[in-house]
Amino acid sequence: MAANSSVILHGKSRNDKPDWRDLVNDVTDRCGAYWQKLGLKLGLQDYDIANISMDHAYHPNQSVACCRAVLQRWLTKISSPTWGELDDAVKEIEESIMLGPDPTASSDNKEPHAITILSERVRQLNEKAHARTDEETWPPIKPKQFTPLVLMHHRTLRTVKQTTAISRLTHSGKISEVVDAASNRQSYLSSQKVFQEALDGSTVTKEVTAILAPLEKGKDDQFILIEGAPGIGKSVLMNEIAYGWSKKRLLKSFGLVLLLCLRDPSVQKAVYVDDLLKCFSRGDRRAADIARLCSDHLCQNGGKELMFLLDGYDEFPKELQKDSLIADILQRRTLPNCGLVVSSRPHASEHLRDKVSLVVDILGFTEVEQKTFIYQVLEGQQQKIETIVHYLNDHLTIANLCYIPFNMVILLYLYTQGYLPKNST
Image (cartoon, rainbow, N blue to C red):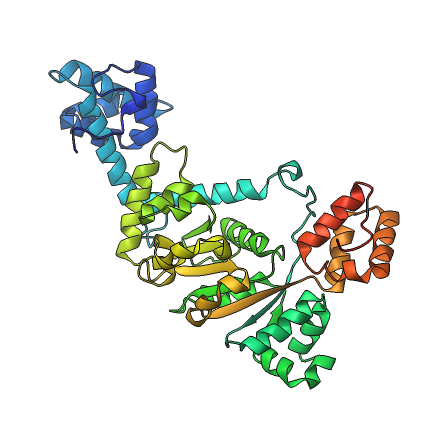
């Protein structure tokens, strides 16, 4: 181990004497279960280790007691011990732990312990983000459960004329007509050739598992593009996917799922894979080491069992879309075996469509979903529910904008504040 390493025990200089209690706590926390290895690396003999083990065989916290005994014997027995030597020994053990398999995992799990540490950290972050209070979001309205959005996915590329035809309908709020036509139900769209061609091969669903099925099956081309208008729920859907993985409901075949916001400066400035991984280890003193070890492992296997959720491609600068780490990942020049789910507004992701295995359009709310959402937000307030439903029936221009969930949220927020707009402006 290099003598000028930057990881110092408890923030002390290698030449300074740290507080004894802090030192014991620090060493025990980092490698207490491996106190035998620590003793040998510090120059103790096998009989020293055996004596320490016998002396503390019945101690209620054996690893802590043995680790403390190792440090005490090292200080008294070894000639001219230095804190730098201890620092090096601890880091060598810690690195070997993270490179080795997770001691709590099944025998067929070959992932390094560092991957397990990072994976658990990401799951905690996802769960914390999902549990944010209403006061931390705006508008401060959050239904008790995730309202399923209407998703239409297709594998074939549409022409500009076909895409425009569908966009005109959805932008006018006629989601139900599109859903009926795509579901082969009787609709006035069925008689129009342009819509028949645009919807050919499309499937409508509310199930997130349906759009993730190709990724779960482990196909070679694991790249899904999610498109939708501003406020339609792309980021909500991406966060639900990340949370579903954290709760082991979605993407079960992936050991690590990373949700990255592409407008985040840290993501935009990332040059190496470990730069991205550090985004999930902030505040952890082992962040740099964990990121480096995970990066090395992932680069060796091409990102197998790794999934990137890249949210907001339309907010990713155009120059970086051509030359950046994210661009290399999307072009399969870096981590070619990783799975990809990218969300974007349609205008920004046109050049990605010929690279993906599936395109998912978020259509938003049908009239039924709008009412469901209203009932969730205003639960138990029947008079208010009837008032807002009548208001939407009388103001069709505004109602036609409420297929976009964010518009509906804003409207309900204004309503709870005692105000309803008279027109769409």
